[in-house]
Image 1 (cartoon, rainbow, N blue to C red):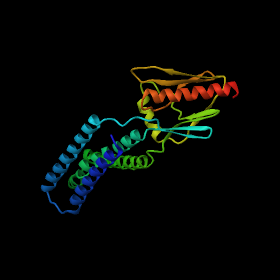
Image 2: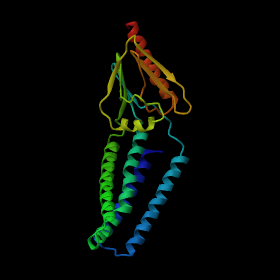
Image 3: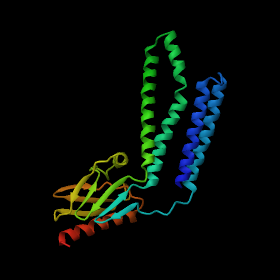
Image 4: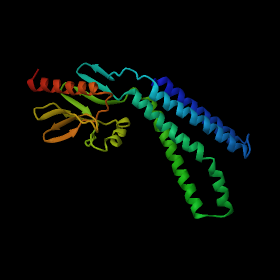
Length: 250
């Protein structure tokens, strides 16, 4: 799906929520019409979400290209901007849903606490506040990720070494969870091409193909989010060629 469609969807949801929250908090609409308004806006948001998902599955995919850039003595591989854009939109929209549907219930809970203090209601209010702050943090991080969505380097291959994020269990059953951190990490580790380094590509139909690296007896799967197997093969061949070049002294 094109980035423009993702951005258009995100902006539409954000505008609808802001308008609805402004009308409710300003007192322009009184109860029970506020309930009808929330239900109407919620229906529109649900319709837009279904349309967005339908478009994502029916639109012909954009031809996949490797996101990389060559500089003298160095090759940089970026996380696909499509992945970054989609992930940032999820981080923004999902917490916004939570804030939109649950925040209006806070004034009612506070009034009930004032009339008759209840430990359960107080705990619920504290939980809502914590979740609200967590949602704001998620939206903030999602916006930051969206801004730098085309600049997230996940692998650097130099003439004498390669740099990667230290996720050593990447490629196991928990790899998707650990891969999320790659969108936000900045500090990379470096492994030098020596005669003690070996590299091989592992074919796995269930968990996905991956590159296994072994340096001086320590083995790990190279963290790399690829678009297709051709891209992974390109990374593997690049590392292998530079390793052979370094060992041969060329």
